[in-house]
Image (cartoon, rainbow, N blue to C red; front, side, top):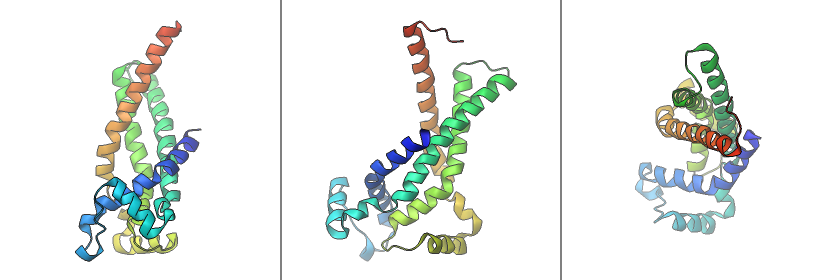
Length: 186
């Protein structure tokens, strides 16, 4: 279920993600190649007019795969780390345990998704299509195996706090729900 919801979210959010990647990458391009979108709406309209509606879904497969991996790895690793912390440490089921487990889940999710993030970004920022095999060959020739973790730190700086906030909110929501329903927390 987590993978499916992540995948569908990746499909739905792909146009915005393509635009985001392009707008961030624009300044790094030579002046003659810059797209110079005025804002998000201008970007979406121009992408559709100049490149066709399919441009909005450039990189949809790696983006959706990344979203599926992200969601599944966050949920699975959070539950695993929480159980491990409760069983093997003096921590109890409290905010400290939830924070620690969610921090570690963010670390795992970032690491698992990093290679797909690199591929997704390269596909979305490209002007021309090339096969996945050719893209991987080029990336490997230019960067060696370190290509898989290019941008890991900024990704973790973004995803770590997001994962922590998500799971802290989830645990507090569960606590309030159980209280309102009169369900024992144990």
